Image (cartoon, rainbow, N blue to C red; front, side, top):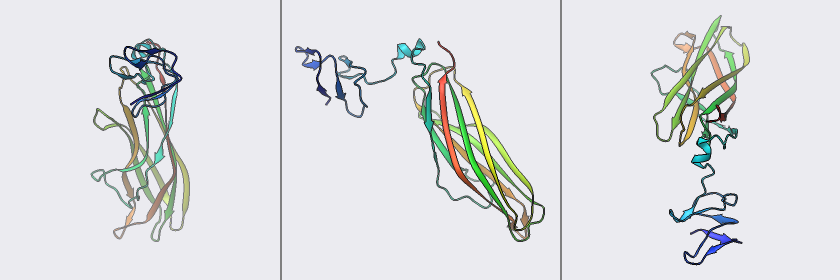
Length: 216
């Protein structure tokens, strides 16, 4: 049940608070700024996004979400037919925004090392960005490729790898959406059935920024 502290007005017929200063209802967050009780639903109206305001573009606030890396072991080789390896993921809720635009930024450090037998060797790494919303299917948004040539034995290379993606939606998405960067292919030079270039992907960071495309 909801609790009411320092309410300004009380409807004695309903025995419910009309205005709330400090209140909680079930799993909803703080509703103090709303001070509103929905008598029809018999619960606090704690949704920070009023649909009418959203349609008028009144709630056009910018949203920034920081993601997290996914702790998975990286394979020496990976084919497109193999299950992808998630590297980093971020979740963002754009239901408050009118026709939102979402920008995803991913950055990392790729370290390469030439192993015994490497001579003018190379490695290809392929990545993709996917989106999964609560009511939808997993969707691939874009792919990127990283390639490094001229790797010899005992060589060590470090390079930054950064990608960005932006999409603008013409409709409201009522659910949180999760964006994930995945490693989908690893193709090093092979000598005597063994890869001669090793790699690592560290300092993985992903973030999502969303704002209104325009006022509705």
